[in-house]
Length: 228
Image 1 (cartoon, rainbow, N blue to C red):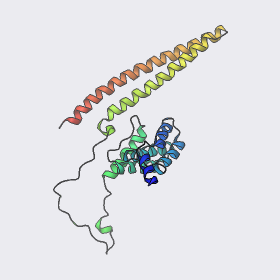
Image 2: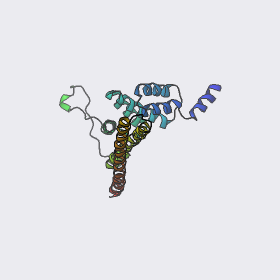
Image 3: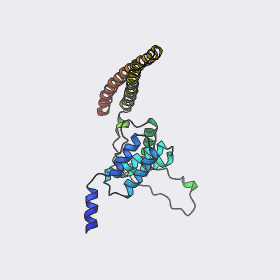
Image 4: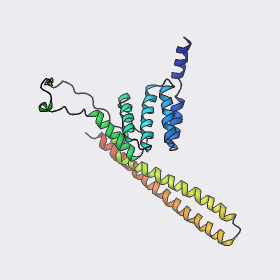
C-alpha cells in the first residue's frame, strides 16, 4: 500500500532527472545529459509527455555525440509515443533533418518484396478492397509547416547571441582600458572595445532585421497553410 502511494506521489511530480537533462543539453554537456535521461526513464514514474521528451532529448544528445543511428532510434520512439512530437524550437538543422527522416520512415511502411523474390512456399499478399475511410494523416509539426519562419527565427537568435557576446566583451575591454596604466594599453583596449561594440550593434541590427523577416514569413506561411 505504501509503495502504491509513493508511486502515485512520484507520478504527480515533474521528473527532476528530465529537467536536469534539458539543462545539460542546453549547456552542450551531452554525455551527462545521456546519463540523466537514463535515470529519468528508469528511476522515475514519468507521464506520457515526459516519456516523449526523454526520447526527444536522448536523440538530440546522442546526435551531439555523433551517434546518428542511436539518435534516429530515439526520435522514432518519441514519435511512437506521440505522433505529434516535435523538436524544441531552435534545434540544429542537422537534428531537424534527422528527425524529419525518422518521421517519414514511420509514416511510410517498407515496400514488400516482389512476388518473384519470395520462396515458393511463402504466402502471397491478398488483394484488399479500398477501405471506406483512410487512416488519419499525422498533423505536421511546426518545422514542417513553417520552415522559413523556423530558419529565420534560428538566424535571429544566433545573431542576437553573437551581439550579446560582443557587447559583454566590449564592456569588459572598456573597463580594462579605464584601468590601464599606460597610454598604449589604454588606446589598444579602447580600440578593441569600440570594435566589439560596433560588431555588437551590427549583430543586433541583423537580429532585428531577421526577426522582422521571420514575422513576415510566419504570416505568409500561416496564410498558405490555411489556403484550400
